[in-house]
Amino acid sequence: MIDLPTLKPTKELPKENKYPRRKTRPVNVGGIQIGGDAPIAVQTMTKTKTADVKATVEQIARCVDAGADIVRVTVNTKEASESIGEIVKASPVPIVADIHFNYMFAIKSLEAGVAKVRINPGNIGKEERIRKVLSKAKERNVPIRIGVNSGSLEKDLLDKYGYPTDEALYESAMRHVEIAHKYGFEDLVVSVKSTSVPLMISAYRLIAERTDIPLHLGVTEAGTFKTGVIKSAVGIGSLLAEGIGDTIRVSLTDEPEREVEVGKEILRSLGFAQRNVEIISCPTCGRLDVDLFAIVGELEEMTKDIKKPVKVSILGCAVNGPGEAADADIGIAASKGKGLLFKKGEAIRHVKEDEIVQAVYDEIMAFEPEH
Image (cartoon, rainbow, N blue to C red; front, side):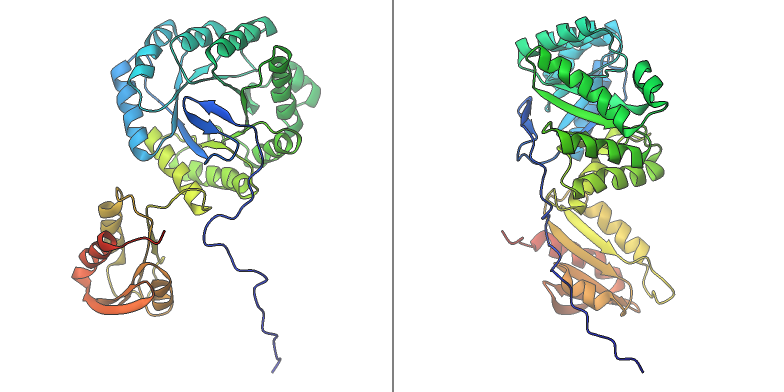
């Protein structure tokens, strides 16, 4: 028999985020700081017709309830540009105007009081148009996001590189950063998004290595909920784990509040945001002797709005259950028809299967987090 050495971890894993953040210049977006040492802000974008003020404001409210810090609204028509002022006044969070093609919509949005303007260098047009937007933004003390997408790069860059590359995305962004600096405008945020996760990661790394500009992270057009969540978690999460990123948006073919929920969870998973109730549950197997799906589903629904950082472990058997439950703030290690309730690592009592949900919920409500 071979004697194997006892391996010890080289360092203890952090309980909360210990990733060093990249140092960036701060930018103020309607009272929300992006960059510097500010918390990472979660954004989303409305999916209503902007001219429908009522529907847009209602959607913004749902996003705010989900935890959105900033909301972007498309201003793509004359009617939208005439409605943006009402939306700004009704919104409880800063509004960003999303501008493509027509630079005058950016100017009208700035006059209407938006907190930031996003322009796409690939389709905004001549430098003179950009200068006019910069001038109005400077006059209003409003920052601008230079939002580069791999799907709308300038033709000369596509001719130069042959197809969208990380250097092409970087060059597009920096071309317009230089134009802004030329006219004395430095209140900038940059994004270099792509549907390709590896390309997006590589492009953001270039910006991060070569500038101190705050970065808005995202995988553009990530897809439906299942694929979009995976792509966004991998792309955004990888960069955040490297200390890169000051604000994020998860782009899904879904309701915007779900984008916010996913974005918040990405931050929580890395320790960048305070957790609400976190439920840990096992994938289940043939050892399971309780209806774990029903128990976890009921608890998730009951606790979804509880703003308290509590780690709850619900495991279905005696293999990992006791260890995980003891490590959580509140835990259940289930066995046939019952579960052993743990609180702060100590076994408290056995609970019948049909009483598990209520018992755990009561413990969550009584739990006092350590400060």
